[in-house]
Amino acid sequence: MVRADGENESSGANKELGIQASERSPLLPTTGPSPAHNDDDPVTNKISSTSRCNSRLGGACIFLWTLVATATFIVIAVWTQHSQQTSNEDFRSVKRNLVFMVSDGMGPASLSLTRSFRQHVDGLAEDSSLVLDKHFWGSSRTRSSNSLVTDSAAGATAFSCGRKSYNGAISMLPDLQPCGSVLEAAKRAGYMTGLVVTTDITDATPACFASHVQLRQLQDEIALQEVGHGVLGRSVDLMLGGGRCHFLPNTTSESCRMDELDVTMLAQDKYGWTYANSREEFDALKGGDNVSIPLLGLFASADIPFELDRKHMGDTYPSLSEMAKTAMRALERATANSDKGFFLMIEGSRIDHAGHINDPAAQVHEVLEYDKTFKAVIDFIGQSKTKGVLVATSDHETGGLATALQEPGHLPVYNWYPQVLANVSASCERLAAKLRRFVDKSPPSLSEADLKSWINSELVVPGLGISDATDDELTRLANDPDASVNTFAAILSLRSHIGWSTHGHTAVDVNIYSSGGPETEKIRGNVENTDVGKFLGHYLDVNVDEITEELREKMDKGSVTALDATSLEWGNGYHVAESMREWRVRLT
Image 1: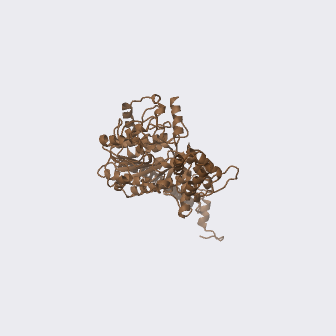
Image 2 (image 1 turned 45 degrees about the vertical axis):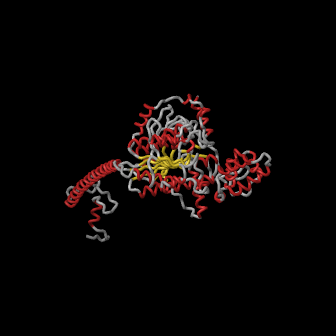
Image 3 (image 1 turned 120 degrees about the horizontal axis):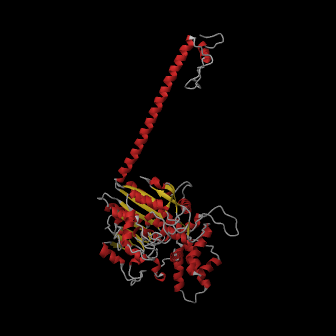
């Protein structure tokens, strides 16, 4: 019924009874009696009775809804947990491959440098990126057990053993006891294993996966252990890289060993290795389709040349990407009929060397080749019938690289110049070697003026692409050829406005990259370098601790102080200072 004022009577009654018609009304009415409540009013009693009924019904509905929702949540949680456990159990039973890549010495600034260089040289858009950029996963903290600034040996020990150790340690712990490596554990579990590098195969990073010595300079011993002449026997199935001099007897001109042992012959005769030592023999491997395991490929006496130089050397040496693709194909074929896959460590070794020299041109070409290799691994995993994961990181940053430079006495310039690097046709290392050879062969009568003229016309202009070298710069090159590698690099860095803070390592966090896949979330975000090492063993489901126990039972601990420091081969100039310093630390 409608009253004269236009308001519905039932609406008015509802207002009097405290029953709101608005959508803002509470779901349940108040439990106390309404001020207008009248027990003798039949209409009121009827409405109140209905209200109480609705209240009880609403409460029951809410209770039932809550019960059902809670039960549903519990069921979903249990199902999800079961699904994850089942998935992990299924994954554990699946054949799988793991490729671990190390970009030695590459920090975040190296990526920025290389990305901008590539955009400039190839005429790409400013938002174009490297392959690595698309697979950024996190970052790693790098300190060693005895220093905030690690070296490659302690860094690689963190990866191979999942443990912190001192600078210079090759899979040895601060108590001078060995720690088993993930590669050794993988081999013991039935995986095929491999190492691919562009430096000596006995250098710190590869050495940590297949040998155990107290100092990285013991490369004669490292070579023996790598081919299987150690307490564990042979753990590696394939090795490709440089460092041939560490395997040849000192009776040969190419040798850098301290003894007369021919490790290449020992490897072949006693441990069944196939040996390749030239580009022709590498090509005969047919990209991995014609490989006899175990394979030892040593394609340079020492380091494989910088990529910037290698490309101009008549295809004498295989590149990192060529060796990596050959290794993956060979290991894939070798595991075709196995229920286990393979573990392969690939190192872009010479990014570090370019950082030590402070050579920005050599650095960008090394990073570009590493990026190319990373893509080759991603493509391989995507095409392989075997499940696989790629994890990549650096052991440390080298050089304190900065993509800007403030010259003394000048205001900052907010720019750097990639075209300067694009003009370079040879690394500073190669130019310095040419200068030393020229000086050694020159007669004593060669004047400083003539030498400076030769340096400018034969090295600086064609090699660095720089036509405005100052007289002071040319004088420094002429007066100190032995230090010329750093002088060439300083000339180049100044023109390109690239800054460096050191010729050594730094403590900055380094990037982690991954293809993604089962359990790779464990190394998401910012983690310790040892977390990366632990992930490798966890992914392969191998027991590194068992290898550690076996090593400690079989190896003679000995004492590093019993070694004669003067008898050690301290290696190239990149790590001599840090190595000798570490030697003194270990003796105190």
